[in-house]
Amino acid sequence: MVIDDVPVMALTISAKPSINLQSLNYEDLTLIARILETELKTNPGTRNVYTLGEYGSVLTINLDKPNMLHAGAFLHSVDDLKISLSHCKLD
Image (cartoon, one colour):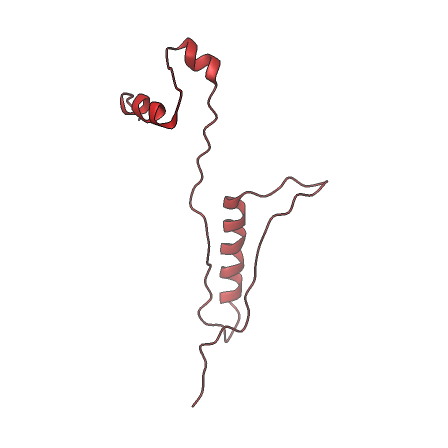
């Protein structure tokens, strides 16, 4: 009996802050993992190369409280934000 489905190699990609380089974000790390996955699949004899723990798109929202208050948006909690956004037309 031959067992041929045991992983031979696992790679971990992480971002560590550096003095000379900006830290990579999750989207950058996922892109690097996808590139490595594609390259590894081109090697003869490789099988079942895949990425685990990838991140989808990341949306960061920075609220400018003074401008929001000036525009009449009174937000004191996440629920207030949800209610305000539900009344907006977002296209």
